[in-house]
Length: 75
Image (cartoon, rainbow, N blue to C red):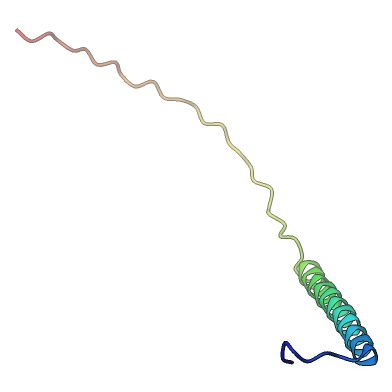
């Protein structure tokens, strides 16, 4: 539409109604897409069971005293 062309009031009203319906439908589609992604992620999260790790037995070992080493000063 060029700058010098003027819309009739009826055409301007139709254009505004179409813009409004386009905005509402875009918002609804975005909301539904977000909900769908959320449902898919929820199904994926439920689909994988938690891994159960076997209980580990810890054995406390005895320490072995190492023989002490003596250092002699250098002459």
